[in-house]
Length: 314
Image (cartoon, rainbow, N blue to C red; front, side):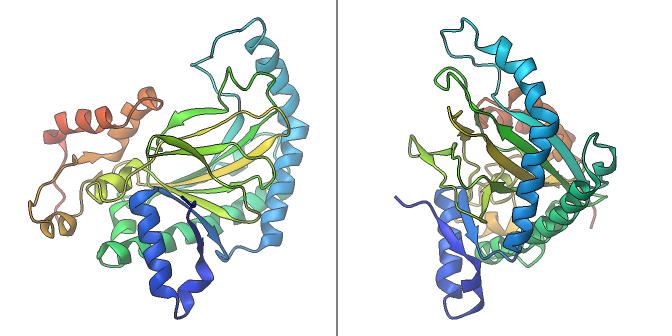
């Protein structure tokens, strides 16, 4: 069972069909895949990594030690289920950026992260079109489905997972599925820890230099009417090394109305719409309190309020 790795350069030649098939298989059976040759310059990624690690050392490491490390694990003998062993901050890019307001980022780091966001947005939109092609949806369908009135929501969670003295008692990040659309992750290539759940087993997502890991969120599961699934994943705390993780979330706009693509229902014999129709921000409100619980009850809860969803007029 080999973790799916997609070489995007192969989309440009005679191996396109086989590569698209690989992406399709990854979306249907894994909910995760790793991209190589994705068009973002390795040297640029090195700069992102360098700045992120410097910023953590300078501004966050000490704070984490004081806040969490000392208090959390002293005298603890059973697993801690209500906290994550991570140090994070969030950047919002769309609909409007908050990068200018984040304290203690160097100007240079701000500039790099702005550029990074633009490159990842472009890659996310490119990937959504590849998914459309595989699903038999018209080009641009998923981007449009995410659009809402002000475009998509796009943001980045910058995380560091410091060494943990008792990794058996606390997770770096507890198991969850991602609520949104498509997630692009630039992760440490030396310190591992990310795992996904497949066929009842936890499988490591291999750290590969300069790769981008992609995973699908709950909204793509709804739009594809369950053809693609969001998959549970977690981060295991490690005893050595600090793991860097920069996850960018390309999500629907808050007022986007999400529902299964009609084409994907009509083409199936039973014409059954399994998933609900809802406004994205309503789902997010629900998710906020239930992130670390199974997703199915969230979909059921959205079905219960479905009648209140506005009907769009074309």
